Length: 349
Ligand code: SAH
Ligand code: SF4
Image (tube, rainbow, N blue to C red; front, side, top):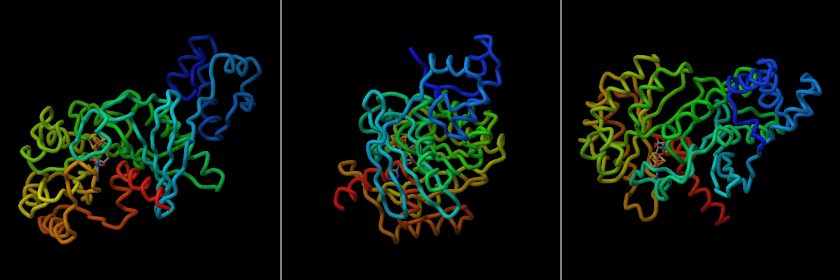
């Protein structure tokens, strides 16, 4: 069986070459070809020598993610629908911002965390994405952008799935896309979002790349969080907040709290005060997200006035927060969620 060339980190590929009595730096050469020059065959790797190329052709292949469809949304946003080799479909969103192009990556087929408000959690988890499936979401979109001379500069791992439930592949992915002679996406331009898998937050804080972390908080108390995020029964705020403090201390980076505003659930002025108390003193920033209603989930988006008041209360309490209600920014905040909406729009059009 041939192996996908995209299923290796640089270290793993280097070890492979060493193990067959070849040179470790072959891996560096190959990484440059596939991630910087973005070639699509081994024969294009002209500095490798005929024997190595032959070996590669016999043992490896260029895996592809099949592009089923590209939906074009507002603000030049594009949603890629990819088909995996086993037939599952995943979605990856390209967002164009004034600061650069960003891609929202999916980490799993489905998700087992089961947050009550989220459409992705409905089916449960089917499987983790492989390293190559993670990497190819980014590489395939970058190859398309190459045609118009555009570059991907940012990544958010906020699509379907819980990235910390696919931890090893996530770390491999981060190393591959960050590789300076390849796609070269700076660690500071990458954000991973988690629902709060506490042991992994500690591990991630000690990871050598300084990747941004976002926590899906969504509630100011255990009482409320238990109701909307079952994960809180396993890792409550009493465990989560110390883990967050550890990340901030260890990495010296500001953390992001994501907070979806849900009508009559977590959107009162009293809730805003509770939230301010909870995160006081942490180098953090709160990203308030107007809820995108999921049919049948039983949650509603608050009125604009209620959301503004919540936001104003945080600001008065000295909390760094943003509330962006315009459409493009919403995609940015919860890109995973906009897929369903884009589908609807495209069907109507
Ligand atoms: N599983 C990870 C990352 C993917 S979800 C996590 O939960 O953090 C990406 C973000 O979208 C999370 O903050 C999630 O809570 C939010 N989200 C989920 N459903 C949403 C909805 N219907 N409206 C707005 N945001 C939503
Ligand atoms: Fe999974 Fe994130 Fe959705 Fe929760 S919000 S069910 S963790 S994808």
